[in-house]
Picture 1 (cartoon, one colour):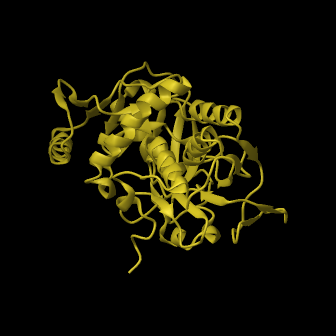
Picture 2 (cartoon, rainbow, N blue to C red):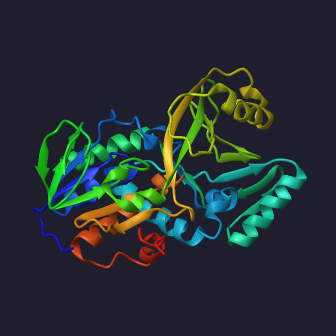
Length: 337
């Protein structure tokens, strides 16, 4: 697919992938419209704790074991990307605490992954993991994309064929290409999306501030410090509802209070997002079997981490440029026979 400046591109989904892609494509001169019926920030990207955490993902998420090199490459894209947009990156790193047995298991996993870390009086520490304010970053991306010429439309795309995109209100619009960045939704837009499994994620936002510092990881929990600390997160595979479930998140609260007793009794609000994942934990990025459709979906827990990398890859596919060394690993058709 080779599109020239001025080509009309629809993007389904206004999360981290969709918004970053809208910005990159708009700056390349494409006429971009982003479709998402959800209010701004009311998606998995807005709910997220904003982790840019290659080490934590490669160590604590078994599906992501072995992915540290690509996750590192994705994190490095953020240095220039964030600076250009004025997005603040918290580089305080990752602290890991727990009993001796837990720490021994984590240290072995860090060594196996090839992560950079050190022992501390309280556990382990790595300076490789960063984070950002997810809602603020999403708003910044949206504003920058609009300044670059993108339009955001509060309707949903329900199909794409021969350059025509029917919307959920019945109107049909013409586009030269469609980028599907709907996370786990939009399955009718491309057959490759059938390989994704929805994952419900619940986090707690606490009313008791926690002084800044590294993200703290313990057994089965993380605490992201700040004015409203985030405690997370559940990974409920096969669930795509957004109903808060206090019983499911109660173990997170208990684990957080063990790590930081000063959080005991803190008022907590449950926030829910629905992500999607492939069986190998890497996203679907590239050409669909549907002509004119490019996929950018299935980020698992790494939507923010991967966003600039994926946006650049989408732009490469649309302009027939080199999508880079991760193209084969992210190929949407890799699960076909």
